Length: 100
Image (cartoon, rainbow, N blue to C red; front, side, top):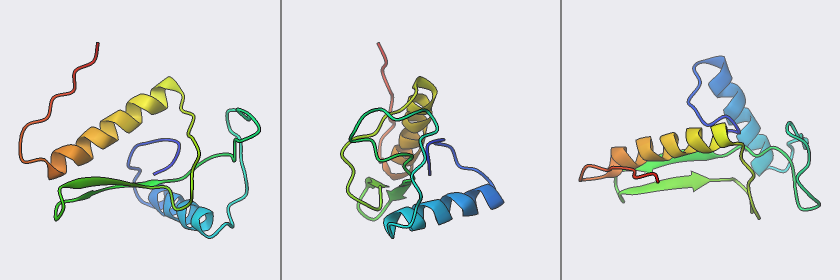
C-alpha cells in the first residue's frame, strides 16, 4: 500500500508495488506531498499490509527502517480500515473496534 491506504485495482496496484520495491532498494526519489514534517522526514512512504493465516498475524512491511510516519486524518481512517480487514482475515473470533 502507500500513503493512500486502500487496495487499488489494476495499473494503480502495479504502480504501488513498483514504488514499494524501489523504496526497499533505496531507489525511490523523496517526495513530500503534504510538505516536510521536520528534519527527520524522509518523504512519502510505501508499505505493504498482509494477513498471514498460518501464524494468525497481520504484517506491516515498510521495506526499510522507519523512524515514524505522519498521516492525515483520512489516511489514519483508511489504515485502520485496512488493518481491521486484515485482522478479520486471520482472527478466529469476531473483532469489534471501539472508538471513543
